[in-house]
Image 1 (cartoon, rainbow, N blue to C red):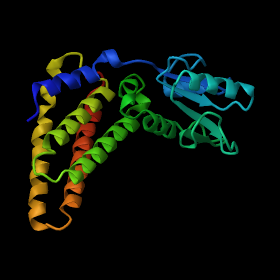
Image 2 (image 1 turned 45 degrees about the horizontal axis):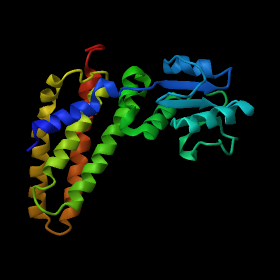
Image 3 (image 1 turned 90 degrees about the horizontal axis):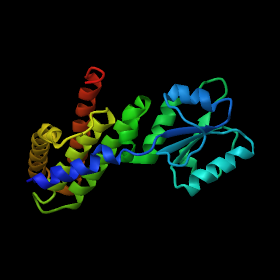
Image 4 (image 1 turned 180 degrees about the vertical axis):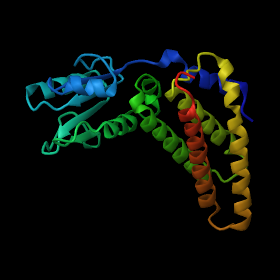
Length: 248
């Protein structure tokens, strides 16, 4: 049902050669170095060549210059600004994280914003920046669950959606492995992930039984089962990865 070609394509997609760019923190000279330490990254203000640029609002002319540079370089940006700043130039409002006086850096909120901004592309970055891992993993799981829910709801012919759903689940698990630094340095890791198929097939069987019991609005049942099943599979994979000894 899933060919060897699919495994090869996934390997090429997730191979370390695609691991490009870093997390660059710039902006306010008094705050940017402290945020770099909290995030566990190094580097200067220059956003060019970064996988993502996190800008700490300085409140002077340097902000617009750095943010314009990031935009021209087509680098995704997440900005950290005080609540009284109404508009951050060149940055979408959804990518601005509020900085509240006396509360320290909102590291978890920054990680969520980076994960939302980059999507699955944040996986190789998270492997190098551990503080991003949980947020990126959850983004990967939620994205795969939504995708499978839509596919299952849209395809009416029994069995036609199976290869698509299973491929998305396999890709999700492989991405999670990548997030936690278990790089697919060789194709021999992919067969280990094939256990995903058994779980996915079991979930499809549950969906078929429910369709027999609830024939009305079957598309909604299929979509809900695919969403919940993919999400549960992702959560189980995440729990396994977080339980592994460091460096495993």
